[in-house]
Length: 182
Image (cartoon, rainbow, N blue to C red; front, side, top):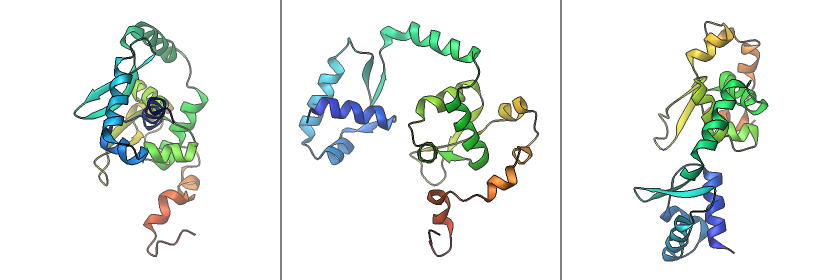
């Protein structure tokens, strides 16, 4: 196992800051090995991704040398229509939200960090604190989303009542009195 490669992959997929202790648990490796691999990754400056470190947690970020290209990409995205993945994500949030990122990714079956960031930057969704888990956020549609569609409330969305009745097992079986997964 190439430890640096595995850590880089975990940081990419996880998308959120992660502590060295969590990496130790996941990888079942010595903490010094993990810290050494993280330091090696931090020293690699010629890559597109860099290791960010804050308060004992690590996260993958884009290399500051590439900022102008990222800015150009973001500008072009704002002038374009929403992508299929953005439409899919916002529909999930509109009809089943507020949802955590992991719930959205469960429904979509794919990492949605970039898509959520794009929707946040466009002002179509907003991030709120998760009352059940202080370590995560919930995403819900924004007032700008409603304005953009020309509806006054989420209940005015097409077929909203039909979708409201649809069960998504992973979300709703936990709320059943018996815990039955029907």
